[in-house]
Each structure stands twice: as C-alpha cells, then as structure tokens.
Amino acid sequence: MVIVKRWLLVLMMVTLGSFSLMTTTNAATVAVREDFGKYFEGFTSGTFVVYDESKDQYSVFNEQQSETRLTPCSTFKIYNSLIALETGAASDENMVLSWDGQQRFLPVWNQDHTMASGIKNSVVWYYQALASRIGPEHMQKYIDAIPYGNRDISGGITQFWLRSSLTISAKEQVELLRRLYHDQLPFSARNMAIVRKIIIQSDENGIVFSGKTGAGSIEGVYSIGWFVGVVEKGNNRYYFATNIEAVNGATGVKARDISREILKSLGVL
Image (cartoon, rainbow, N blue to C red):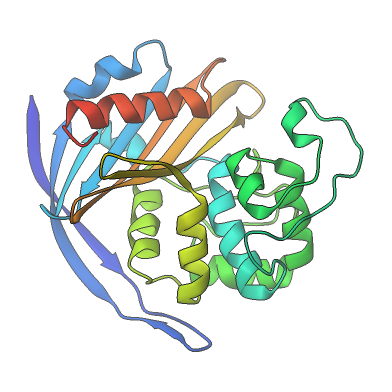
C-alpha cells in the first residue's frame, strides 16, 4: 500500500557573513512506502527517504524513523569538508595530510591522504585532523549556520560526530543535500562544487551516483549504518538517505546496498 500525504517544509533565514538564505515554505507530496520494508528485513529498525525533484515528491519508508535523529557518523564528512574549505583549514581537495604512523584497523588508512582520498576511504584520522584545525569556535559557528541537526558538538572537537553528541535525522540529511546542490548552504559556490565532486561514486550511462557512508554504535550496543546521497539523471535529481540499526552488522555498505536496491525498484538506477 502507498499512502500519499504532504510534508510542510520550512527553510529558515540564515545569515553568515555575505551569505543569506531566504525563508521558503514547501508542501511537497509524500508517498509512504511501507512495501519497502522487505529491504530492511533482519534489522532492528531502518528508514529510507528519497526526494524526486522534478515531481516535488518524497517517497519514505518508516516515517517515524525518518524524523528520528541519530549520530551521523562518517556522513558528517560532507560538512566537515565544507567547513574546512571555508575556514581555510583545507586549501582544496588535494591538500595532503601526513599519516602519523599509528596502525589503524583499515590498511588503506595507514598512509598519507588528501581530502578527496580521505572522504573516498572514510579516513577518520584525516577528518579528525581537519576538525582540530577548524577548532570548536568556528565549527560551532558553521554547524549553527547550516543548521545541522541538533547542533551539539559538546562531545569534543574530534569525536562529536562519532557516536557522540551530534545527531541528525534522515529527513534532515535529505534537506541539507538539496541545499548543497542548489548552492543554498552558507559556503562559497567554489567549496560546494568541490564537495559535490569528491562524493561522486560513479558516473556512467548518463547517471551520476554520489554519496557517503557512515557506521557506528548507539550506546555501545546497537550498530548503525548510514548512506546519504544524490542521483543525477537527465535533468532531474533524486536526494536520498538511508539508515539502519541492528545489534550488529548494520554497516554503511549495507545501507548503500539497500539504497541502490530501492532506487532500482523506483527506476532511478
């Protein structure tokens, strides 16, 4: 069964330096797709949200969960990148940071990285170093200006997005991606273009598939997996977010696989 309703979306006025975002209200059609539940079998909870820009329509599985804020894990690297570029903590996507020699559990992390390779391989130490360069004062300034989820970075400048204080919902993730692709976030057009480029995962057959995984735990018990992204196809864009929870095994890769399967079922991929 598909239940159709409307979501009233309000974007507030945000001013930061020379950037000013106007207040807009949008009542988009929402198709509640509980039939997508088959893709989430074996998980404690999960949700999927996609916004079809040309139709001005959302499709959502588990609407309540779509509005529940969870730790963003490595999906926050999208916004860590933007803030680093805007503040000068990173010059561009090719800025190299040297590996500190500490052995980490993923071999690909144990080498020097650029922002582009750091986000591709989800290199936590690289983004912790960027966050330290940004510092808590500037980080909070931009988290508030975006605004990002609950805006709480009290968990510490290198930890707040990792199973810590910062939380965001799938619905909010989709709205931020929409604004990123319309240059409506409080960052320069150059920096938003860089970040859009470095999250591209594939570009073939006229379809650009972009996104970022995230994975972690909730209170040390459940595991959580995220995948948020955008599909550019023809003159249309589809913005989406998936999160899953389980006692174990809810990874970002599994969230990405679920996203792709649902998008294929919708004819997007």
